[in-house]
Structures are given as structure tokens and as C-alpha cells.
Length: 370
Ligand code: AMP
Image 1 (cartoon, rainbow, N blue to C red):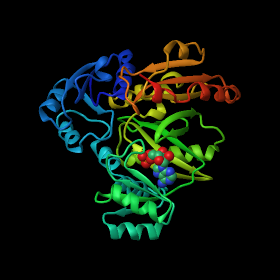
Image 2: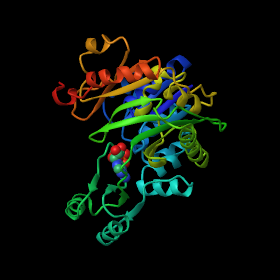
Image 3: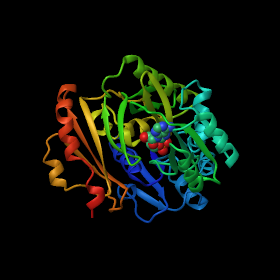
Image 4: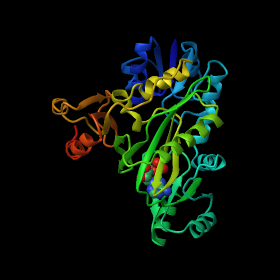
């Protein structure tokens, strides 16, 4: 089966690498000349709204998927008239706009931080009065890794944030002093079968994922089940096919949805080394109409992102617990260029080793990488 992927980043690369053992073949569409995924599969170079390039991709694909959520919905719909496209374009539409996304969660009874639409200065002032401070002002579109947002703690912050972000469609959210951030990765097959991975605990630095630990510790069974149940509501409502990620704030017993990604996710990279079936393989199994694989975790795992540059490879590999993944990308500050998965046999071993791994994979590389 021939799979077309919109987007040539590391997620596309890892999807392709997971698909070769299943006998799948891949073509990516990517605007640049060379890409991370293009190093391991055929690449068509073109913009995502270049219909000639989209047509070329459709011609060589039996099914099309995407590896990032800012694919133009129109392009996905146009392709879907020619070739099956999974996840459904509607999932892109919902997740590309933060207000639509929050309203969608609310319509399914999934709790979120309190929010209000902001389309003008008057609405901004009214939203601040309603939600109060601290709160977070965000652009509704094209925000990722903490970009396009400002935390408001004082009236002066409100002025500065309005100067920076005002004039675009915005959303104001209550600032949640969460205990921690969690994510769930779930998958739905073409015939409606649903499976989900254990909850993942995530730590961000400068708005970018730094570390994921799985299974997240100190979780009641009830919380895990609740997250999986919320995910299955989203999957079912969208008649979704493929992997979906939902990011959460845990605030005591409350689980609040922050955002969803209609794709494989950075917080699921550990699944390559430490799950029975990786998120990438399960995504492919779903979109290709194959049975899903088991999602259980093997051992206890921490995944660290490499931002800017990969540390010296021999040093990473010298640690017997390490599994290294590099993305074939050149150095650029703030860019995800690789990750390492560290696996312990059980929770006790993880607790013992985690501080040492944290020290080893602290992030000097984004400062002095070259
Ligand atoms: P986002 O781009 O919405 O995922 O936001 C990036 C990061 O900013 C999140 O992972 C949180 O660490 C933080 N953040 C976003 N929204 C809120 C909020 N309403 N309350 C507290 N922290 C937030």
C-alpha cells in the first residue's frame, strides 16, 4: 500500500520508518527542498496549497495522512475527494482554531480552562473582567510550542499583551496553576476500534516539550480511565481514523483539556522503544485499515528532546539505558533535532535513575550546539 504524507518533518520520518516493516511505501509532500522525512522516502517539493503538487501526491498514494495540523483544510478536503484522507479533515478544522477547539471540548462535556473569545479591545477588557488575572491571552491560529501567547498577571501585562497580539482573533483563558501536564495518545481504526496508551507526564521548557515520563506516576485508575474516556468521545464524534493526542492540565482531581493534535505527537515518541506497538505503527495500521496493535508500555520510560543540536552521540550511547533517535536536521536554535528514550525495568528503578538522566539531558545543547 502506498501512503502519502503531508509534511516532511521528523514525525513523517518516524511514520515512514515504522511502516517499512509492514510493507508500506511512502511519499511526502513538503515545501522545502530537503526534509527530515525526505531522507527516508520519496519527496514531492511543493506548498500545501499547490494543487499541482497535491495532485501529484494523490496520483502516487492509496491513502493520505498528515504529520502536522496546519495543513490547509481546503487542501485536505480536495485530496479527500480523490483518495481516502485520514484523520478526517474536520479534525484539522477543529484543532487549527483554539476557540473552535475549546468549544468542541465543551460540547462533548470535556472540561477545559475557562475561556472567552476576544475580537476587539472591548471584548478583551470584558474577558479580563470575567475571567480575572492571572490569565493567558493566545492567538487562535498558528500557535505552537508556546508561540503567540502571553501570560497576564497585572494590568500592565494586559497592555503589553494587547500591543503584541491585539488585532488578530484571540482567546483569553484562565491561567491554571496545574500540578502537572499530562497527555493521552489514543487511536481509532477504520472500523471504529479504539485503543489508548498509558497517560504521559510532560515537562515543558520555554514552551517546548523537554521530558515525558510514562506511565505517569501517582495516578488513580479513575483519572486514567477518565482521560481515555474523554479521548474516545472526541474520536467517536469526529468519526476519526488514526492517532489523536490530547494535552491536559491536572489540577488536583481536575483534568482540563488544553489542546488536541490530530496526529502522532512528540509526547508519544517513547512508544517506539517502550510500547508493544508504536504510535507511528498504530497510526499507519489505522489509516491503512489494518487491526490495531497493543498499546501497553514495556517498563518505565523517560524521553528527552534534543533542541537545537544532538549531544555527542558516543556520550549518549555510552549509557546502557539509552535509545537514540536523530532526525537528520541541521542546527537551529529552538528546533527539535532528536530525542533519547531511557528505559527502566520498573517504577523503583525509574525513580532512582531519573535524577541522573535529568542531569545528563539538561539542555545545554540549544545554547552551544553547532
Ligand atoms: P499551548 O501552546 O496552548 O499548548 O501552551 C504551551 C504551554 O503554555 C502549555 O504546555 C502550558 O505549560 C502553558 N499554558 C498554556 N495555557 C495555559 C493555561 N491556561 N494555564 C497555565 N498554563 C498554560
